[in-house]
Length: 489
Picture (cartoon, rainbow, N blue to C red):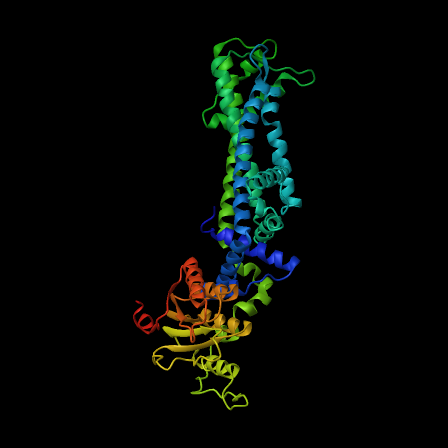
């Protein structure tokens, strides 16, 4: 399983998420955006952090891991096919030694498919460089087949199909598809020709072969020149070159002298190495180097224009430009009261939340916030230390979103969360706690004691404690002042 995606995998996931949102609409990304704002300062970093968060949440990382596993198995299968194919090519070209080898037919058998494949690859680079080759499409088909077998049943949905198109879209921004496909093609043929060479060495070492050439139209002199031209470069690196007398003698009956057999066998091996192995090795090296260099230059900036709408959510104006005006000492809030003259819970909470807006650019290390308190409770507590910032009361979804956005940008070091034990635990409150806790360095749950203990209150407290234990939260029913100041209970 992927623990920490590589740089390319992160960019890949970004593109996959972007394409998914383009075709299916925006995802529910509020929590992902808050995570991204905490994880990075610049826009590309936040886009990558957001994409990784969504990919892990929605199972895309699992799908990517299965796809990569399928790709590795597909490469292994191609490697095995190349080995057996190369060995079979060698045996088909020279036979079992019972019949003499026609040297030019053997040469055609050894290098014919190689040259055809090379010409097709060169043509594809001229006319369709962004399209995968036939071997590449075969590899992708095997990869998808294997990845479906490896993928967990719950991940076999519409998350994974856009991974491959996303990769091609990403790579094509730097025209890297041709170099990745070239590495695959030339690597496959290099392994094939290496297996062919090893098989030829084994056959020539364990069997006695005779060599002959035959022609009806061509004169013997043309075959001598062809032998010399093809053997010139191999001879420079030490491979034997049959002389004219050996070539002429091989035109009537198979040569039977030891030196002639060794000359022809060495000539075939040399031509295979120089015109088969070396070009493939050089092209593989070029494609691999271009792939590596291009991959390092691949950045999210190449496609940052595609994220213009997302940038507005990941970089709010206050976060991207900064607040240059000093905060007022006190913000004016209209006083909302009920018929008795007392401030309503709504007005009280609005004043608490808005009074903190002017402090957003300050780094607070201690904060107290409450969730859905009984209106009869006096808040904030009279004994609240001056060093502890009052985060107000979170009553509704809008206040919840505002609070999460605030501590995402300016997280306190220690946050105490007051919970009204008169209320029964619900999924909304517990879910909010799980959203808040990762955004701060340390969180503490203050279970406020019941005001008038009703029947069954102990059972409610027990449920609260069991729920908080399941979340792994630190909690107590005593005021958290000492913990806020020292970090210890």
